[in-house]
Length: 284
Image (cartoon, rainbow, N blue to C red; front, side, top):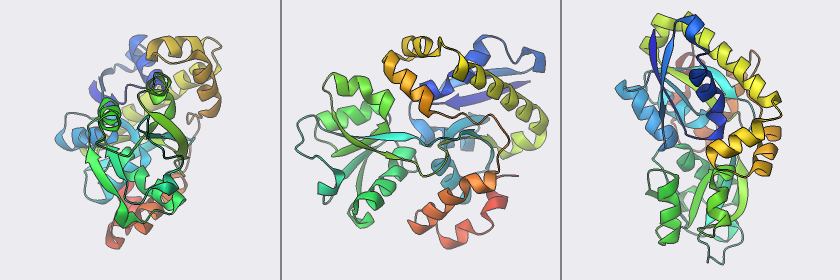
């Protein structure tokens, strides 16, 4: 059995990569082909829609919005229970000290419907910026976001703060704070037709990944291994491991995603009729 799976090339997905590289799925007679999705959730949604991906590990808000607006996919499980800590980045020479100082900010985003796009609305709500004042510049990935700040093509760029830490340290941009997701940050989604045919085996491989994630969480060598692999600071990765809670149990998808759907509705990112019977649309 072969499946095509995608996720961001970041430390969150180390359990998946480790499971694949150590042959952990062999006993299930499953072969997973992993693709690094530098364009984030927006790129993965497109992959699920076009069939270039069967399974994706992506942000809760992005895939929820896509499914409620017609994407033929289902959320299978929560991957990371803890919130994602989005760093708020501005140009290195910007005098801005807080997002509340902006009037009509331009956000660098990877794609419309991506986390970097949707979290702009979370930030705007937190800092009192009217949604109508938000502007966006599509930049593709983290490197495009840093470029946009360096070249005055954007005022703000939101991205996971540990991933961007090397850019901040070398002066490519400034971090003026963070905004966290008010919900579990990562979920696992699957094309609806693939899930309908292979539900049992897909759930089995997710259970296996949970066991690998538990090992990574408890392995005292994990900070060193992750820092080396992802070119990050060992002490920062140790802190990140303490803060991160991979989902190792059975959880209620309805309870986990309710606040996501409520935010999408309240922010007019989805229409009222699109969120009707949302439980039936998002997962089986």
